[in-house]
Image (cartoon, rainbow, N blue to C red; front, side):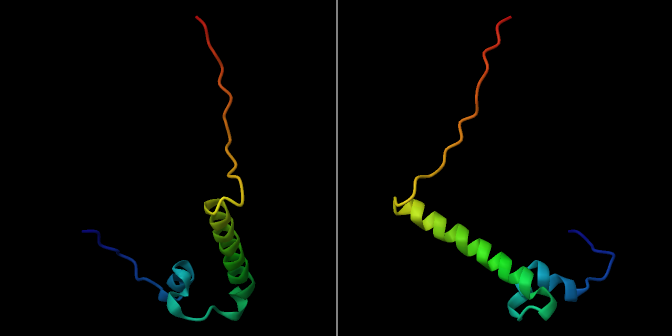
Length: 68
């Protein structure tokens, strides 16, 4: 079992875990809106790939043959 020697400041914990169900502070609205928009875009893209409407990009790494 780990013991934390330092007190936890729960003011900062809320930002890390999605505000723990509380509304974000006004100073963080732009960042929160960006995060939500980015996550929504990823979800929409994943749904379109799952439905077959969008081709999934496959990156093939080049291989080199080494002869000794």
